[in-house]
Length: 84
Length: 241
Image (cartoon, rainbow over all chains, first blue to last red):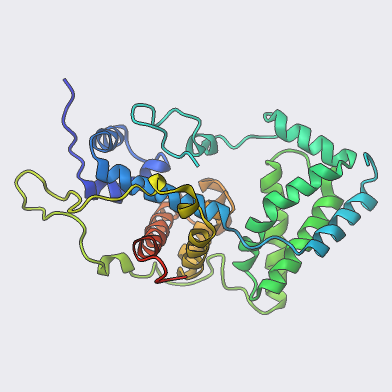
């Protein structure tokens, strides 16, 4: 028989980063996973965090201006003559 | 980006988390070996791809040290030049990415010292700032509830069920970028390195000279604040950004 989860939604929010970082002891990790498996609201929260991380990853500073990129490519060509 | 996988296989899927616990060493990653070979042979397209992949996160990291975007851009360009010149010295003892970011961070640090600015990267005294989230309304049911203690009082919308263009759209990316920029420095540096630049937890803890636990605490607070900012935007579109 499976134990009902003891973790509350508040615990899930509090422990989410530790869970993601694999820093939870086994028992807490299992409680966390058992809770999330049956809790749509916590899955919603986790999906929100996923959106945050996706946006963070997509959103570094803007790239280099075209001209600078071209200058670096030219330097690469000059310093590392090879294919093309 | 898949972080958790699905119920029943949360842990052992090829998630970032699992991957980052074993940062690959040179020789252990055929893709990276091929890339390094291509760069050494002078394959221009490989270099152009590399620049496009890393320039944006490198600019974010440079901004942790220097005062203006223009200076950050110069630092990034200089770093790329050093990468081109130093490719033959790259021994694969760290990953190519780590090596590039180390060059970048060294350059940015020097530049910051010349600017008379040596603040970020955790020279700041004192503890963590008080957690702003503590002041927000409590989203959970009361602890005294006999059966449903401390659960969500209202459901959470699944943002990844919203139309793609909505969540990963330019506006949300901008909201998240601004929210990260507005974090206190000690939180901003951790979230920038981890979530924008993609460093591993160990790399960040080492670079900042903090414990793994402290790294996690800062990351947790930073992410929670940025999530709140994005929530404010998604639930009242047009209010911010």
